[in-house]
Image (spheres, rainbow, N blue to C red):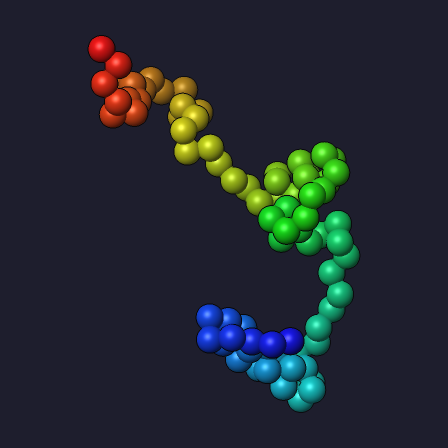
Length: 83
């Protein structure tokens, strides 16, 4: 692959991994597509695969009310004047 200045760190990482693999210090294992969490960001997945990968990422909605059963003291305001 062709690496540019912005991706030079990837070039270095690629060479380090290749060297360690050739020295026998690291063993690279294939990862099945079903377990590739990064696919959610790079491919259009079927709904089932998308939901499964999304749940594995453990993302949380920062705008959802707290789930601890407590009350929100101050309601969220967007800062826009609605009056």
